[in-house]
Length: 348
Image 1: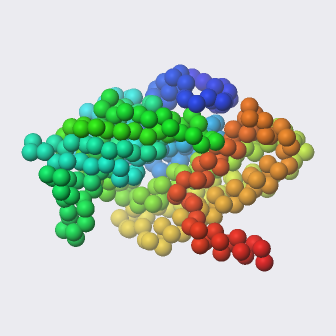
Image 2 (image 1 turned 90 degrees about the vertical axis):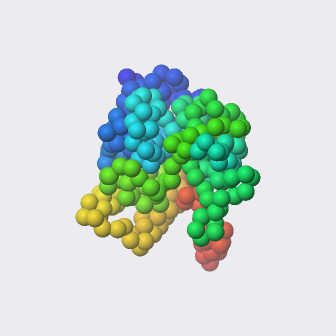
Image 3 (image 1 turned 135 degrees about the vertical axis):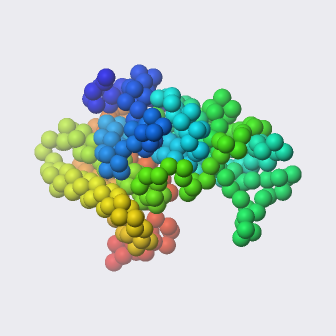
């Protein structure tokens, strides 16, 4: 087993997670933190999983992000029929990943299978996935299938990695080792048993009832906090006279608050109550505002580090690029009008 320090060193300036680190991840089943124990996963509670994601994001931003997105995709084990989920996750190396976008079509066949065609973007962990998940419009005889409200029907599918073509087209300044690539499927035949609807569950667990918005907010947020903590550790090595105590205190306090939210949500659901839209908004606003505050604090610190922090072969530069690449994820990005209003207020 590699130590966190050894993993950080191995992840420096690389574009793909080394196989020995992937092996350690599989050995610890870290990609299956949300997979129920009945399927061989770890079946962690929400706060346990968040702690793992924070720890690994602090080790390396790309690793933490990949673990978050891939373990999040493995959450779909709960949406699959039990016999299919048990079959797939009997292998400790089973790893889902894919795209949340609707990038293709699924043509219904006479034998209850579907023919998948399309192109999907931003599949994190692509080189390491065993299966790709995707969303597609349902067709029959070339005509979109409609639901009761008259809307086009969308369904999610799981297909084996050997059925897709991976397109390595990640060009961003950071998160270079996440393996976030596009993928394409051409006339891939899939049984209906390997399709699912993301809000229909075959398991009976409190995690099934967590609103997706909260799950996304909290799992992504601990990544930003982890990278911020790592940035602080490296910054003080460059400028030992910097006072980062308030920044570190903020990270610790807000991490505690994140865990408090996780515990509160599980308590609500354990009492068979519904998480209100007001509570969901409270958590989202907390997370979005915290990412904004972290970003400004990191920039303030970066301005004081000098030219050494701009060296493209430095660890602090990699953390900086990883963090600000991650901030471009749509989940916490403010819309144009909100940005303009806040920016105008700062000029007053």
